[in-house]
Image (cartoon, rainbow, N blue to C red):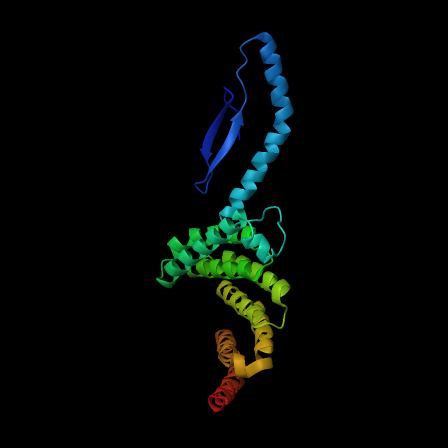
Length: 257
């Protein structure tokens, strides 16, 4: 983005994420009149070129799993996703990146899964919209990958984005929103923010407790996580009631089988 070298040509350069981008650099002046024209052309193009470079920098940052870009529609229709060749390609690419990343993550290859989840996040945002459940799921999985790699702050950011997405997509009484709360609690616990983790887990418990027939296991897992926080912070008097509640709910599950 520094001084543009002559002559006018289309020069391909690599961005930080390995993608090729196209820059146009100004003409060499070969005559006096040409020199005046070249200076005028540069003065005319500089604001637009600067804006394009800025947009490309933001896009590159987004592709790397950081920051945001200009918003597309928050949730795209099925017609938008599958009704055109462009939509089909975006959706197919997004699903392909996501499935490849999932396979690697299941094998414990989180370093290899990370760039694919990043690509899936960008692609899914374009394919289905950044307010869609699919986008939230990609953010969740990317957050988990960061958590596995010890990047707890970055994991919390991705989990927060997933939580906000699910809040808009399914509402605050939905199990998928509760799962996003639990994920964010894990990241906050890893960071050492126990009070925030506790609040998130209690909120998730409230959602799961409304339907113990369906979310019995998730409720018990949340109880255990909350108990571990109380144990770690020396609040032993709060651990026993949670263990008793887990035993009670487990009994409900046994009777309904």
